[in-house]
Length: 286
Length: 266
Image 1 (cartoon, each protein chain N blue to C red):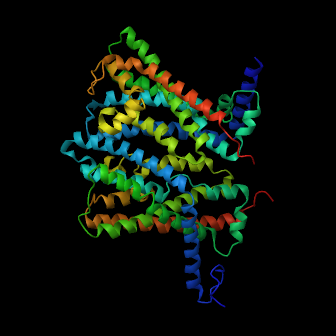
Image 2: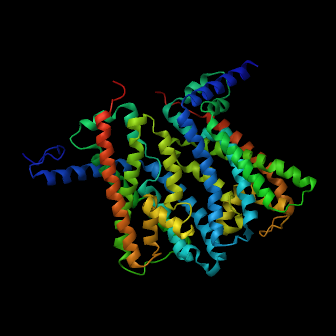
Image 3: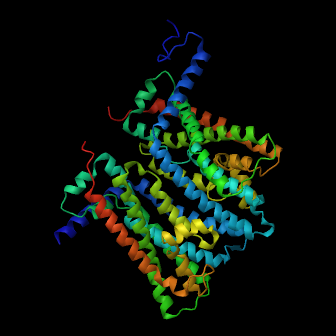
């Protein structure tokens, strides 16, 4: 009977690694399925992303039309359009905003149930978030990019390496964004109410992530500092610069490597914070 | 009179509860001002790359942006909370509001009085003052009237958009973010001279929905520039009428929505 019952995934007869992978996959799959049930919210959110896509695209194209040399921040018009429309799609893949699930569970005390499970909360939430991101990639990413491609000339990749690099960059961006969101939510272990930190995150992530304007429009030193000192550019700016082929292959790969460093660092920090929190946590609600 | 006192009591209770979480309140206030600050900063950053956007120089574009910011922050302060309607409809908490002998809309607005948004209104109006100072405006009596009416009309218009977007929840509970496309999207649209947009998109947002009259036409009238898109000079003075029209539509939609509201019953 061993291994026949797919709904029981706690102990695998095939060794710890296989078991871990099966569990992770099952959690990611459930994250994917969960979001397939939010059909109306997906449609509503995508519509809004598309409207903002038009707004930002027209504004940036107007800047390009009158800029000296027609290349503001080193992007031509097609690269800017790609930047905007891929950005509107990626916005919901990396889920820059609107994740307060962990903070809410800490506040209500439901997090106790998460801690009783044989999988650590960090792993479980990461798996579910990757599943969610995969669903967003197939729905909320595709629509703005198609609309953008139909209405504006977009930049077509000139190097085949850009495509796999972009996919890796998106995956890393999701992990970096998840790490940041997890840390922001985890402040609720100490503060009980993470609304303040979440609001600060929402404010900072949009501007410093490159959503409102490409960070390359800032003075060079400032952009560089943001990239190295904060994880925010690794969430949107890097995958978008890769997609638009703003830089040569070497710099592209370097930026993705920087994303990987941030992803590892943030997950390690989140793991550490989670351990500290578990040691001091007093579950709310009795 | 008793009704008025009831509203004051509601507002007072909200203010007390907001002030009792001092750190949260301070952070929310800072974030609110920060959001408007970044809107202005975005315009400044874009102007680093070019000296004209859509044919407008920086001071002129700032006038358009700050007119929108001032009006929007005022509208968001007064009626912005109405976008929580979909939560109330879904949870059934709207029932509690409906059985009280007070107006539904004022109650909803006072259920979460956004004291944290006050500072942003002040910031928005200050920005407008700065933008007016940067431009060389020939102050005729009609322009003095316009500069007092324009931010108010903008606020009324944006309030109407907030109410209309929120009313969607009466018919479509899961309308979710669609409202943001017109409230925040409308604000972003009106933050730039509308000459930057493509004809079809501009036709829809600027003229069919009326966002041209939020800040673009009044700004042209204040500056004394002819509209490159061909509307006559008096179009800037039409913004109070457009705002009034939007408010009427919002009032009708709200009433129809409330009438056909069916409780979720739990």
